[in-house]
Image (cartoon, rainbow, N blue to C red):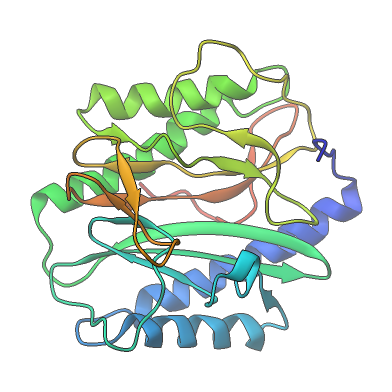
Length: 254
């Protein structure tokens, strides 16, 4: 699939999709607490999406069986919600979610600490978020795609964290996953030239240990090979001639 340049009308629809997804994430942040199951998180998130008149874009995507990807501690992404998996005090929980609004997609992820979390976990979550904001400094017309990748990866490396290499960000629009793929580590080439109107899902996946990951037997859940904690932070981003526009985040908070 070729990289698409969105029209003003398409951008407005994606802006609405992003705004509603941010609202869903805010509700999820308030809902998470010790003792609830990951399935309850998924059910709450799906209802929040549908109550806004949107469709959850992860549900049945390539066979994924839920609306919210719920990944706990050493799980990087794509954890499958389970009524028997209970959230514990001290866990970190990554929630990846997306909505479809009038045919257009948004995609965003957040990692939340539950109760009293370790200093290691707090630092990991903070650096992961900062990696995203380092990357989008280069997300503007005239720069190259892998400028974003290099900035994310370099920042994580400077702070002693691992960067998952087997998964990456992506373009987004009328499909959840569009071209281009966006690695989170420095490449030995520049990548495509960025142009105003491109919409990208930029998503650092950072670990407290090494970069190696494995897939569990469910063929979805990705875990760190060394058992280290992992965090995930993502937004849908619009490339402009100037500063990038965050379609799924209304206020930058570090």
